[in-house]
Image (tube, rainbow, N blue to C red):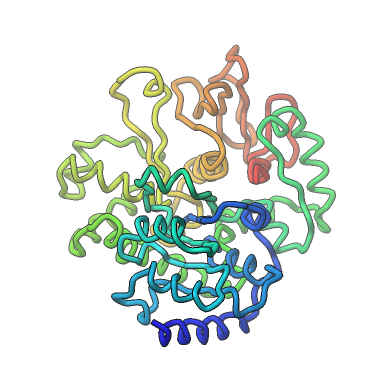
Length: 401
């Protein structure tokens, strides 16, 4: 075990010497300030979990010998006990360890619980958003933070080198005119649509700024890694079923907002209804899709189809050639809202948020006909820089985080 620890420290030295991005995701300070003994960061592949944890580790005022970064999918950890390794690190003076890809460790929940109970060491870990923490005793002892993809606000900060504030939903609904004007004034060329178009097509994952020419290839690699590695590992999906998951993603991509008619869809992709429900759940957990239920399902057991959306607008460029503008608008709205608010699709208007606010999504000319006389209802319009009254620019919802 000592040899493995020495090799791990050598790998960390190599990682430490690499240049990290100077931009910090909004979640970094919350993770750094957590007093929990075990802290987890989960999210989709490619959103920047590893970078965030390395930045956090770099900023710790602690001797390098007392802190360590490891990625459990590295071959040196094959058939190694997670507890035994962390125990060895702790016995030799280690105080803080970052464990990337922790879902690759066998029985990681039980291993972490033992670390919590017996070792004097602080653990940060990252994992796929698809994992489920099922040990209730462990769940009471850890802090978990969800890292979503880049928001439009973060994209602007990265691309323009400016600092911009985020706003809660209530602030946007109440003060959207002033907020929109304030944001546009901070852009050197005042052309918010130019940047919004770029974000919709290419700006969701931070690695866009590393190599723009290979961005779509990287997205395809992320998709394939989630399907072939994460989901097969976490949910024990047989490798020969992965093509079916890919077909499901493509079916969602080429459709308008996708109402799930299970009988037809199960025939289209040649799986049973039971299996299809499982696959939808897996893809939703892995943040490749967003599943939005009908508002009536909140109250009673009403048989209404769910709607399926790709998780974010950039996935369209990787999975299909063309996309409906209306679908892209809804995908963006759901992607920005869902990490922080309850969202359902609605009979009146397109979406109901937090069981209170009704939103109708459309273009610049979209009116209030569908939501006339509905309390707390709003039109979310693409193609307008600044809104008026209950008509709000679509791009502004990219400032929720």
